[in-house]
Image (tube, rainbow, N blue to C red; front, side):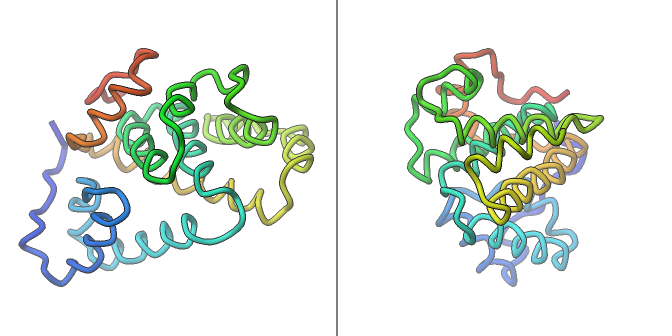
Amino acid sequence: MANMQPLRRQDHPELEELFQLYDDTMSFVPNSLFTMARRPEILRAFSELITQIWRTGTVPVGLKPLIAIVASTAAGCRYCQAHETVDAMMRGVDESKIAAIWDFERSPLYDEGERAALRFARDASVVPNAVTSQHFEDLRMHWDDGEIVEILAVVGLFGFLNRWNDSMATDLEDTPAAFAGRTIGRSGWEAGKHR
């Protein structure tokens, strides 16, 4: 059970345009945003940050949610792991590739550039931070400095979301719970489990 109940959508018509953006991109509005709506100015700023990270730059759109899954796994946030499986699917990532995320180091579905990015995401998300200069050497073999900034922006965004959702014990919605159970659940992921 959530530590704070989400607000009801119908009670915030002034935020409907923002909520519609999530309906259009994810097919649902995350409960975390309905909780954040208690401070609409924070929700609006957060949504603008998400939009800029997700919709700009040159890192492939399908890689960003995979980075988020790995970062959220390192941080232990199952809520965000589940959400990003849906986001990856919505961005055209094949379901078999999403299911192989736990084995990205060995899976033939991932190339060396993706492995470098996912390894960096994992190691940047643990406490204490495990990023070394070798990570940057590996990244620079595949990504330019602007793309490395994009990759770390996704990791940083999910650092916020992982802490937000684990602290709030945000209830997972049906859509991401079902999809994550079908894909990453093959490797032991369970819906609704908080650390």
